Image (cartoon, rainbow, N blue to C red; front, side, top):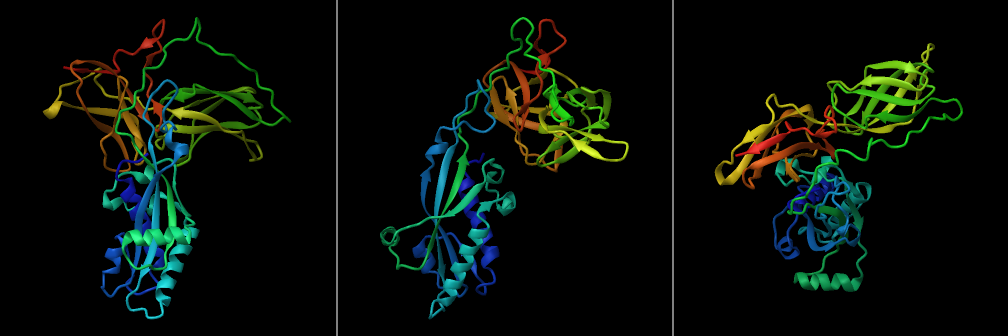
Length: 400
């Protein structure tokens, strides 16, 4: 997701991509985002490649889609899905035959053909233009086929002489809604036992198979029970893999053909969605790897003194300092759920951080349940030792 600076961030990213690609086509080439009449009146010597945002539209397919991370039973205003329409125009004043301008335009079109998806490295993070580089849907650049009539109308509206140009679309830019989401507390107990159906594994072809991982969300120190078939075909090792942070091998104990156990620990673990596999190493060194199953590494509120207490400061703002275990990494989406209200984390320094700061407007004195949510994975809030299960009274903040 992105904030309202995303339109400027995407425009700046296009300037960065085109500046790298077209730098060698004309000496001193600058990439600007002026209006066409301003670019035409700029009579400085260096040539210009102008990236002009002339139109914005809304993508209907995304308009009613729930924001990423919203779960069943939670409510959140859909993001605003914006499509940006650009016109790329070269301006070379000392170019009698127009060949330099055509060379610049050709280099720009080739760059967007080869680099049609904006990645995190394309955004100018030093320009302080929000977090568009973190939105889950990458922005894609596609050519726009404008007719001669469309181009004629555009340049008439620009009140500028026509110049050879190329039109492109950038989609989708997701702008976060300013309205807060609501995340109700989880259901503590379902039915008499709260247990679902159980199935026995039936491996196909005699190959090792992984059919279940319990629990599906684990904190540091939790013992995982992995079930399947032919898990005794070698020395088992449970591996957790994250799409961004690599693979971590867990201390694993072999139990039998249908079960192995592992402890969730490791300095490289971060909260969020992981996948679990079992790697079986034979006596001759051969390795067999089962299919992957999802596993969530849940954050834990690790403050030494719980529940937390807070008083509103200037302007009625409450400031909370929360210790997170394991530490979160830069680039992860971190929220503190205060009751049913998600509060985004204040930016922190460094690649990893275990001490997080959250600020939110006070709604008056009261006691609010606290949960940490990192990349869609919540910290546990149920007291499993209580009978019947109930919410943990200590995981809360008391606002006076």
